[in-house]
Image 1 (tube, rainbow, N blue to C red):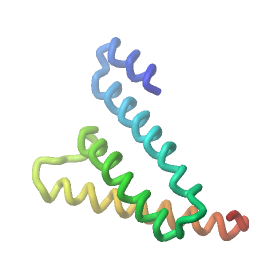
Image 2: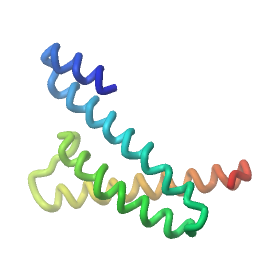
Image 3: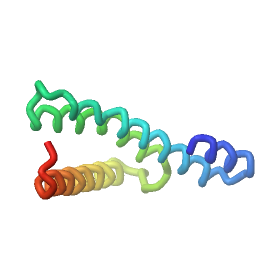
Amino acid sequence: MSSIALILQMQGKFYEAKSTFVVAVICRFVGAATVIYQRNSWTLAKQTLVHFFVMLLTVYPLLLWSDWFKRDTFVDMFIVLLLFVLVGVLLWCGIMVFRKLFDLH
């Protein structure tokens, strides 16, 4: 995806290039953070909390920088934070249901 972003940049499609680059970086952070859930010595609560803070420190700033959301005021940035948390909770719950349905440990 980073190479696609570079091609878009060279074509003068700056917004699309930035968006593609942000998606690529977010995917890398999310992928790298999956190792947190491979720490079998940690409880699920600890894994979830550590993962949340890693995503908060990496993905949330990227969302603000991406220009996908209005960020003129503190309230705007707080709304993005709420969306970040809401999507995270929904994804986490969906994955937990999926794991239970297919008995994945």
